[in-house]
Length: 68
Image (cartoon, rainbow, N blue to C red; front, top):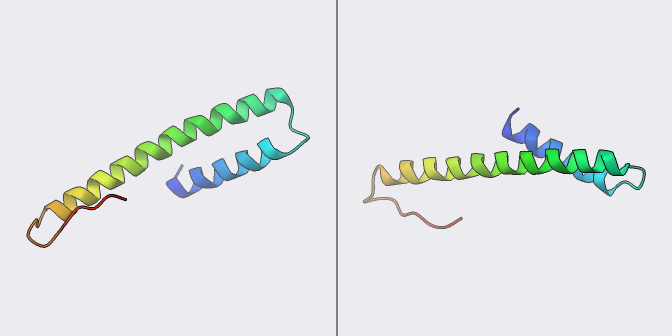
């Protein structure tokens, strides 16, 4: 899945977890899926940050790295 579709899936999971008709078993399964997606997205963001830092570092005279 793409980053955007993973974010959409997490939003869908959050809606289902907030619904009053979601069973405990389904909630646990959804929670686990959401945590897995969260870790995947965090890794993707870290990799993107590193790429930006590399690109900015290619011409250090004209670039500065700032915290996100």
